[in-house]
Amino acid sequence: MKKISLIIPCYNEEESLPLFYREVTGVMEGLGREYELIFVNDGSKDDTLLALKKMAERDGHVIYLSFSRNFGKEAAMYAGFCNAQGDYVAVMDADMQDPPALLPRMLEMLESGEYDSVATRRVSRTHEPPVRSWFARKFYRIMNRISDAEIVDGARDFRLMKRDMVDAIVSMSEYNRFSKGIFGWIGFRTCWLPYENVERAAGETKWSFWKLFRYAVNGVISFSEAPLNIASWSGIFMTVCSCFMLLLIVFRRLLFGDPVAGWASTICVIIFIGGIQLFCLGIMGQYIAKTYMETKHRPHYIVAETNGRDVIRCK
Figure 1: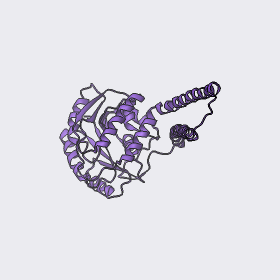
Figure 2 (figure 1 turned 90 degrees about the vertical axis):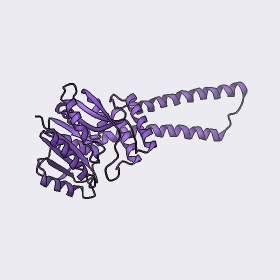
Figure 3 (figure 1 turned 90 degrees about the horizontal axis):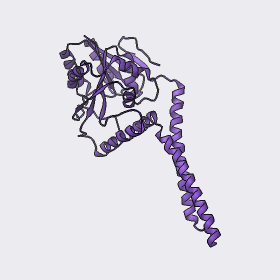
Figure 4 (figure 1 turned 60 degrees about the vertical axis):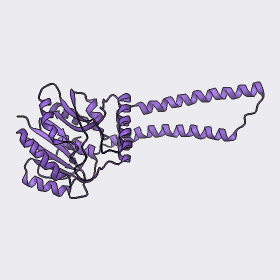
């Protein structure tokens, strides 16, 4: 029987951990498989680490990695992938929005041999602000048009994968990570399992609109050159327009002797062109900043505490 590893990133999940642990252990015991629960404490400021320690004391399946500070969910997932020892590996949130009850169905589909991964997607966005839902749908549509990574609308990080796919994810060791794009970019045969959106069991979401926006920008920059192409074509367009307007002004002066007036309009044009230039420089700056962070070769995470296992720090 193949071993199953569950990776659970945690950030201030003290309230939801007991609920999640009770639910997921019941499901895993029902499967009758060898398994491990890898909880990654991403620098929580509440008693998440204390709760994990208590669970590890009474359950040998529980492994926890506690970061020295908050490195972000992407780093937490990467740490889990690097340290998972199972033949099948799943990523789940501890807030119960990724229902553990789906795991038996996901395992059955994966063991059919037809797929390398079974991923989940939400078919509804109940309990979510309408504005956030609208932007999320637009983001998925734009990403699929401008990048090579296929991202399904409503896709969650919650998925069960075979070892080969996990090894491929670990081999992509970039510092600026966007897992939804990585899952789509590496390929492999993926089956999508739809389910209705589930509200958090406890606590509050850690994803503000601004954090989601920054995450989306990181995804676009990580998996698409379209913004750079936009900047280039904007420059070409503005150059053509300026040449056309220059010829128009010259002909107007030679044919009609009409002096060019309009100081205010001239200033507006200058400000507009300057704004386009700064916008294009900002796009290039984002790519340069990401390249700068990659060249530093800093670790994705630093583990301050764990419950005994030798921690693997992937390059």
